[in-house]
Length: 217
Image (cartoon, rainbow, N blue to C red):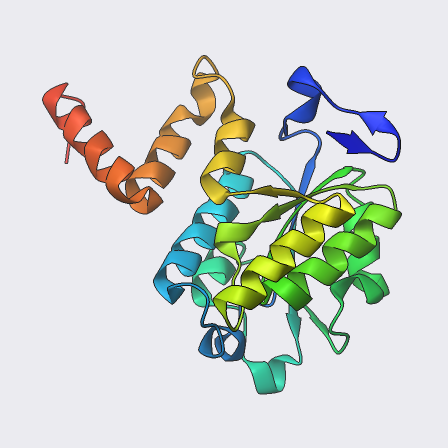
């Protein structure tokens, strides 16, 4: 894995909570209404898990919308994770052309930029590729993103990979932030995220906790 001539291998190639900043772009009603590449429930589930993971691991998170008055507010599931935040409402299609967003990310001092957005080929790909030029190592969370068609989603991912963006998934990001089960302070939180948003793994985990007598519900 390379970034501006720097090669990242071993542990340096992995995300840490201390180096990460999360940018969530345009998870709004109008965008979801036009999404045809992926089941809406899956994207909502995955991006909510990602947001909860960021909250759990104290990863700074920037929320942004585009023309909220017409496109709708950010979905309630995300706003409830960050009730103290007012999303940055843009007119620019490319989020990275709004200086407020660029400044908000830069103010965190973090250089690993994790992004999810609607739509993949436009609202995710453009700022992801743009941020690379500013020296960020960019991770695109593809299962917390979607596009108008499957082809548009796939072409967006291909374009990002060709530019140097690193594709990943919501569960992968949260697991990288946890990294070690000996970090016991975040185990209850990540377990709760898995139970709520982990799909079949979450149901299996609930069963395991029951068999071990650890499920008090």
